[in-house]
Image 1 (cartoon, one colour):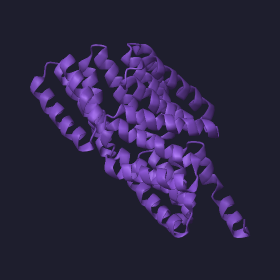
Image 2 (cartoon, one colour):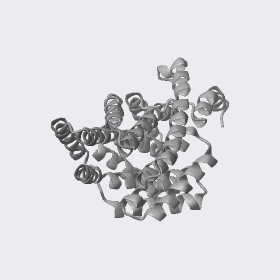
Image 3 (cartoon, one colour):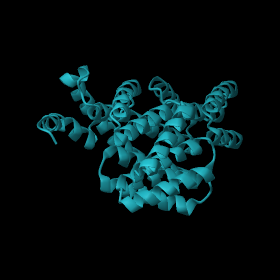
Image 4 (cartoon, one colour):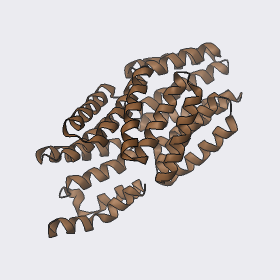
Length: 332
């Protein structure tokens, strides 16, 4: 490492430390307070700031920083940087409901990683392609991707990757009706996240376990998971996880016979998710609001809300969520 490179690494150590410890809002503030935010930052540190921005739902900022960093990585033939940036662009596109773009980015990551022998990125690409398949209502394909990713993460001893993939796999196994396997995968996700120690990852896996607990009627256990997840997400300023926690509390209210509270929470999540460009979450919350309105006997409003949700889910290609909305609608 040159003396100049060493100086840059030391200079940006505080930013890296904040990101690695999950203090994403502080990390982003530090980046923009620094002289490097004017354009002199290395692509590696622009990408660090972009990752922090994405974790707190600042997708416009994250996309701008990531696109700039990706171009620099490509010009420098930096394969690892290019893979990291392309993967993040896919994640941003997925959250914003641009599923075709997300699929394109994740496929590029998987192909490039395979070509260059980057096993960790091969696994991350597979995990993310599983998310796309899951959204499209293709559980067999999704589980195949997740199993492939999990095998690589296990081989690498990547605890974070194991936590994220087991979380995704658990929800997909639940959808497929494999409840015992889903619970096992979810518990492994929670335990792996605890080993990593990052609040956002712990919140993600707790919310996944809560969703499974709601489905089997363990509402108070689910509520405990959600309350803890919401606190962890709040500590990091992680708006996507906070909104998902609120959505699940709305689901609990509906299951507990309080459709008024369910509607209040779901409508709030829908509005905030739409403002934050969390397209999938906004559509899920709209669906939930429609179900709550139907339970309240407000049929005309319920039908109108359901129709809006249906249009949004179709635009996303979210066949799995559409099927769930149809089932839940008929059950009320």
